[in-house]
Length: 291
Length: 149
Image (cartoon, rainbow over all chains, first blue to last red):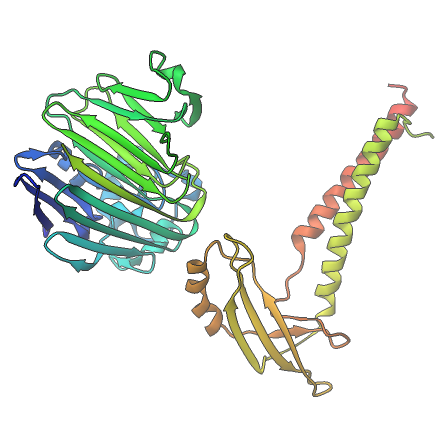
């Protein structure tokens, strides 16, 4: 695989390295500080099987679309993963949006930065991506590896309402961890907006502390600044701070962790309700810092 | 035969009737505009630009001139399709609009013209459904009085 590898060193002289696969959905297959790898490499099989796992992107749509709105009319055999996901009962052939599957075009590559674009007019196996996604769009991605971590800028503009986000699978090497943040006093679970105290009764106001012994698939909203979220993952062997900012309150972050999984996903998103985005133009700035 | 005369019922019928008249008037006006576009010709000049109605409404506005074959007069008009959600989407559509072969539809007896002649089917169906609803409620008013329900 032809990965683009960005390198830098921290102010303490520790090497930083991040790798992307532009031709496979701009997946961030590795993010390391010294010997610490934060991307769960055990999800590589899932990545090779159906483009999930490792450091996948989200967009222009979230999760799985309803079967009635999934675009049809192209030769599915051109995309072998479709038969595999359909055999598992997944009816959306490009779950989480075409961006994590299709080959991106790099526009700039330097030692510590890369930028790339993806357009609905681009073709993949001869099929325009707008046919596969069901709308025309343009996404841009740039990554810059600085001394204090990885800076990402992602954006989307599209014919209809859409979103962008990160679906990075962070490793829990000790099989446990915690996620801490301050969030608004409501959250979304099972597509329903609920009071925070309903799921997190012992927590002080707006303070979120998730022990990853439990399963989570929840959408949270940043507090006190509704435009900026800060989430700290303590995985034992390392700590990772995710800071993201958005130009509008149409943003949220998803916490995804199946019970007993070797990973946790902290997913900044450019929509309040990722299943029902409201913007046709949106962007996110994300800073990932390994502590 | 007498209609059920409760003031609330009559107010409801009056409000519904107002809606029916509004929708019918709208459908009638659009049908008239559709019906009046009886002639067509090629535009002598056509240019497209992106308008901005709001943050989420960017229509492509076509400005055109044409010659009325009957009189030889040069006339001008403009027309816009439904708006795009952002400027980028409008810019993407601009080449398609620019390369398409357009016809100017016009009314020989007025200044009205358009780049599209489409039957107002949604408005007509809405008006028809509302008329059926109004007639049903009028019938219900008489039915209730007749059988003293």
